Image (cartoon, rainbow, N blue to C red):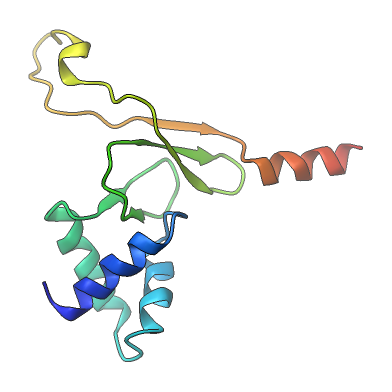
Length: 127
């Protein structure tokens, strides 16, 4: 675990807004001013591949990252792209049952809707 990876992990664990790589870069630069964006991207990939952070590839354009490794799902606002956590009992692979021609190894669930801020803005504009 390099110092850079440790700082990236620590910064991800402090926030709950599921930042993009660029946002992680901004957070990490406060502590390591000379770090490059390429280094942040590379270390995010290493950390996610080793299973210490989550790389979220949701229905939005940019990947986001999550330092909370507890089992949970995510919800995405279809208007602004904000991502939140959904803590419900996880679906287990045996719950799926047999799937013809496949051996199911895992799953990814994404909820989507409208966040409170976007809903409030809509109400304000229509009133």
